[in-house]
Image (tube, rainbow, N blue to C red; front, side, top):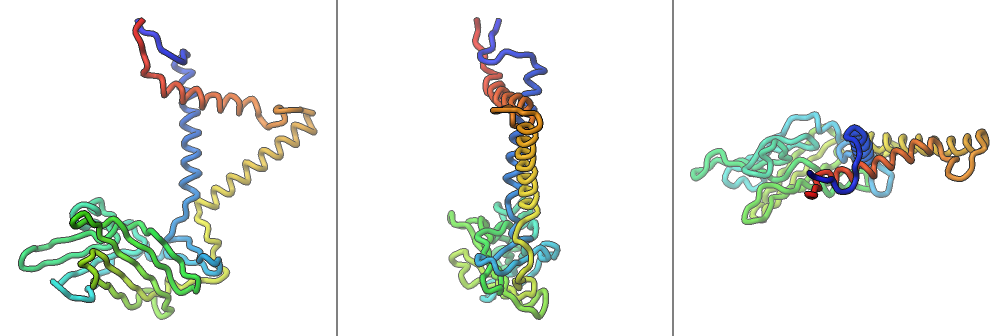
Length: 261
């Protein structure tokens, strides 16, 4: 015979409490994810004067380029703000490369190295409206050092895809640089707010919560003449909800904790 330590309740009741806990965790996670800005669709310069939108690049295919050194007939492939592509030995085998190096010489045939994953980091929107800079990190490593690619998008109102320079002069240090002249990197004054769609959704939810609380308190206080904690809207429901969240967490923690009696 076994006796469960801690909470002892019917299975169906605990399932309800667990669902309340999962809902609460999901809401917190959604709020966090929604607040994250997508650097390729919504950027604001630090001085707040210029807005940038790089989402056009995400719809473009990968581009090929030759390195500046020309050594060993290296060829480079890259993508700006896309979901990535397959390249290299380890880092980008999951089709998440932002930049890739390929070579074919007398010793190796069809070799590749990932020069950084496709997620932009260290994103900087220039205050003068003349471009955006970011970094592709965590490329394939050599002697425990990961390859890194620095991307510079410079404003040039001539065309969408202008001059592309792939600088591999520092490849001995596993550092690479892409410079692209493009009209898509020109900042716009008085443009987008710099908020991602997720941030807008989160702000909307916060406004709804504030209106719900303020409106509920005023209604209960002046219409129902409620006092104390009873002025809070649906106070009974919220007491039960957060109690279920607490109980659900305790049940998950203790559900396998048995001792013989």
